[in-house]
Length: 584
Image (cartoon, rainbow, N blue to C red; front, side, top):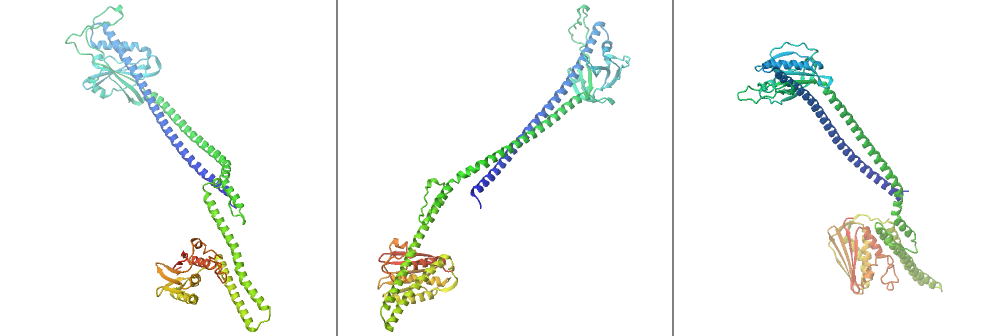
């Protein structure tokens, strides 16, 4: 059979399981969201770091190109002015040729190769001087390519020098040449350039001024310092044209470093994703472990909690088990019960009180029935004993038998009413539905009651319409009306009156039976519908008034889905009001 404790434990565990699953899912979703947000933030940081490293690497690579180009330009300028100081006042192009030759001789240790080429652009004849050099003066394992561009007027037409090794031609972009007059002296530009079949190069173009064309003052050679130029007077020739130096290295060198950064970024991203997945897995395992632990604790603790929670119910059960047919008291303090059991306690108390009253009524009924049966039986036995004491004539025996028949009729009616109540209690007396003419039925009841009313000089008054129809149980309604009229006659005063009123009110039929009899006190009014209750037992000790009539009336009215009310004033009279539906 079902167990409340087991059911409560199951419900509790199911509820907690659902709650844990919901909380776990919420926490897991929150952790996953937080992990995804953290992963996204770390991914952005790693990509920013990658971009910064790539930018710094490119800037460092470009700075090295710029430094090497500026060093070469300074070296060429130094050789140029050194040649000027050594030769004194010579033509400009002669000095430039000497400077280039000196630079070529000075760089021979670095495997230099030179050649001359001429290019005409925007009216200026440019010459290119190629030098194949290491990427720095101290690093000879990673060669770079130098290329010098200067106006033709500085170098004339010297004989080409055969390169010592294969050189790479780096053309000067036309945009730089177009803006030659307007470019600043410190102009430099980084870009990528395609050099024939040699591939892509990363280069820098640097503009470097040679200075002004003036006549320098010779100084002693032992000073070791170049002569200082005298102040330039007005009308001095313009400054010497600037030269352009290109320095380039293969783009693959930079790409290799950037690819390393990219590989590191991919490795870091893969590690970040693995870490995020591992953290999510650990959180999920932790949630599962916590859920299993909580469920295990609940499995153990719920038994104790449910047992403690059901303790008041056990107390109530113990108190109910002490109830017996001799003692209907529920010995239990309300303080020992929970708020939920207080209504049950009140209901049980009311039920036990009703049972006690029912038992009392049954005991009283047994006594009343015994009393009601004993009186006619005693009368019957006395009548028979008297008739048998001596011989009687036929007329006397006939009178005796007639008295015995009346007593038997009284006993039969009493037994019929007891059986009727038993039938009502068992629920067998279900109402039947049929059309009833209430005026006709009331007239028949008055015809039966009228001889009894005339014997007590009572006046019968009827107030009802000509026609009044209903669909109800005619037998039960007739029994109700007969009992009320009979009581109105029996409990009336000689010379009094009885009034019957029938009327229809909406969907209901109302019947009022009024008398001018002895009336009832309020205490009596609350008991008149109880079985075997009689308000004036001494007055009606003989007869069929055993206190069952109104009990039967109440049961019949309930079966007809109606209500019955009583209004009474002692020594004034009583009014019974019955209201039943016109259609049941």
